[in-house]
Image (tube, rainbow, N blue to C red; front, side, top):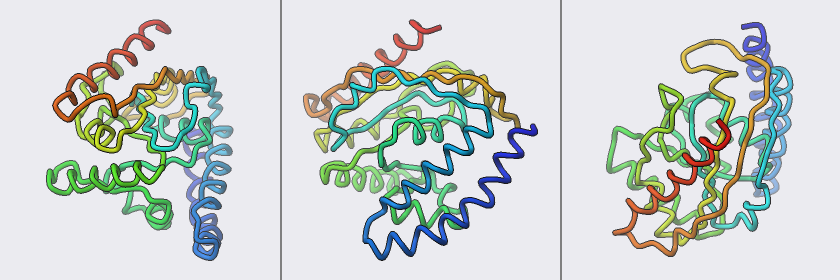
Length: 235
């Protein structure tokens, strides 16, 4: 609990300060690059305070990250900070609307090109995925959790099809990722962060452009099978 409290206090002070400095600079430079730099620094300090160590395997599978979707499993609130801090990619994300209600952070995310999605509104969800497909075609990299939300059991959950449709439409590369250890360090439903090691394994990419819209189920199954196998190998 002490570590979690320290992280919250730090981020509560850092996010507003970094936003007040970074947003004017980003507007002046017409680029979100400074926001990513400040974000990675803040996440790095937060992970240090939490005692989280990250080991990355298969980094070579990222290759050219233009028009690429990184798809990891999702078990903990620690997942996104670990990925952002360790991959060091200026990726965008499709994130739930609740995130965009956080003061200061909401403005940063919007300027950086993150896309809000209301999972309860099918029409809005489809529009968000269309925006993601356009952004991918423009050459951006996205981080998308294909399960849509954190799994309750820690086991790999079913994959939603929307992200795969966007990847197919954009002709993207999908880099599946197996993330292990975050659930033990920051369990769902508990205000606690335990120190320890997280392992992130980046798998061989899948060419979503080789699949058609009618093949979206098969693409989702292929990606899920790869992640499931990687998790089983390291269990």
